[in-house]
Length: 266
Image (cartoon, rainbow, N blue to C red; front, side, top):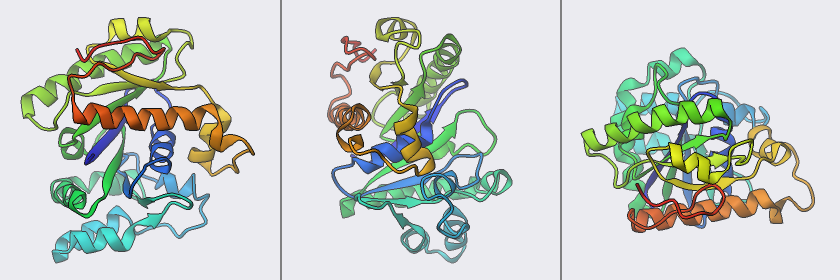
């Protein structure tokens, strides 16, 4: 793999928890970049429960850009995700700081792509689409883009609109190797995979179960239960990561809808 980006539309759950979860099951070194334009360093405050000092992260990388050492600033600012092969690059401290990072995204993307030569992949948490300060060069320069969505009517409506615009933008800018795909969190609440796939202009890569307690492990640093590691959420995260790898190997391959039905690559 190379650079993978996750983002959401309105009414959609859990981009950050999904990104942290995927990083936790990555089979080789991976850098998780918190590029959410809302700022607030949600991974430091959530998964790490504020135990690490705030600051650093993309703010330090922006300073590194001024001195011509973006790569060094990334390495110095990345924080290990315990028990995994992942490191986290914390985001901006607040939304105003995030909006000031506009000039950082192109050189950051170049450095993130260079990590592939060192055996590392990159997962980017881009937050909600359409917000001021959105890291568009990372979004449209990714090798694979995932639209994280729920299965409610509100979530489907927002996802449908953004999926159409996102795919059109990928076609226009010619960036990335594949069109965006959807990842459904909590299929059957109330709409199932066939219904979701039938209304989206992009393929559905797969799904994650509705598991608030499990998601809290990644979103809020809650201590996992005894069977968490072998539970349905972790299995689904592993399956999603494998599906992402397959999608990158061949974007025309069939992918699965949210309930396992072949959805096609659209």
